[in-house]
Image 1 (cartoon, rainbow, N blue to C red):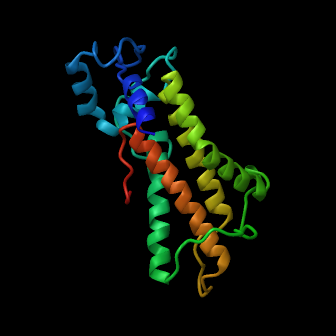
Image 2: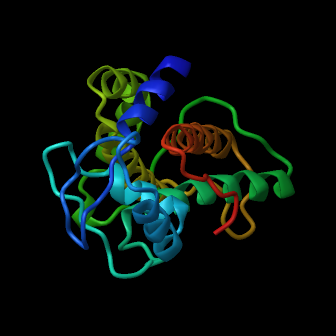
Length: 207
């Protein structure tokens, strides 16, 4: 993992040229004043996300201003991580912790999301393939692969979260399914936190 981080950091030295410039050069040739201006306008987290998200051959599209809402993929990923931490805190207040097991039947699922077992399987698959994505991204010096995997994981987590209530509702007591769901949420939070930190982006506990 440490070697993967070094490789990704080397690939992270991209810089935009103008509001929608293309990636050119690496950290050794980037103009410090350009990077400082970008960070000053968007903040470190958003600036890194903007530079790392496109593939090497794609243009870097720099937003005019920082947008802290779910339409922003970086914010959505950070929010998903913060939500997993909130679930852990909520479970602690209710007196239970996560434990791997059967997550049970969904509480609800919308027609737009498809079958409930599909959103569950999608989340499982994304969590399981995270290590191989990191290795491939490091080998190819393609941090955009990590970014896109985190986006997909966050989206899958939210779909699963809406279908499988991780915490008891109302007067319901904590059951084995809640412990299993909490364990899965914690696993998702771990992947999101690790991926964000590999990219040099914060993984906040609260949002």
